Length: 285
Image 1 (cartoon, helix red, strand yellow):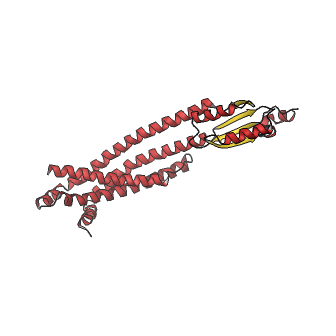
Image 2 (tube, helix red, strand yellow):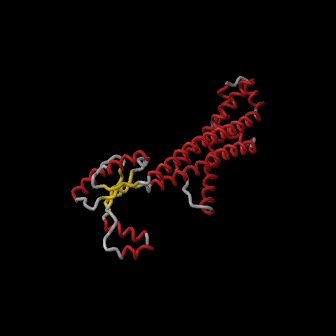
Image 3 (cartoon, one colour):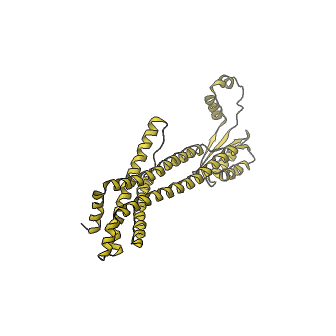
């Protein structure tokens, strides 16, 4: 076994409490970020589900001819950002109204004529549900002379988009703040570990050990500490997800790549913190 790896492993045996505290510091720092990520992810998913309901409804004149209808459907489906365009006849519109408003079922049944117009219902693709994209499609559809009115809930859509932008900005700022706090905690924990072995480092320097030779065991130790801290943080995040889902409300867990990122961040933090702490100490010796 290489000397650096052997020394890194022996450090855990020599100072198990200090190693444990270093792992815990990394784990809980990343756990806070994991909880924030869990919250951010589920807020984003909730907004996505609301945005999936974004729909443009174009009400048609009763005198619309089949040729006009076919032209509008063909051109509408070809518009940028359109996912689906569906024709709703007057009969289907009345059936839908009766199903949605059961309390007025008798009123609808007593009607001599169907007062509801036929319509075109347009759903937008993900990424094209912004107010500007929806408005462009709505204006293009409204330009047909046989389209009486177009509705898409402009005010509601603008509020949803504003919430998404605010949530994204807040997530970025708070995420960076948590990451900085985590980095400070991790660097402090690793520096304590290096300081506890300052005499060993001084002796190694006295017998002619190079800086690289001195640093390697500490770098490997920091790397392993970061990996263990990242894995523990992922496990704690999973536990928090299970508790929240079981006791409060159903949420989604983070994507697999986010969990890999948590472990990778812990590994990088452990390695870089060790490198900075050891270099600072070597400069002082």
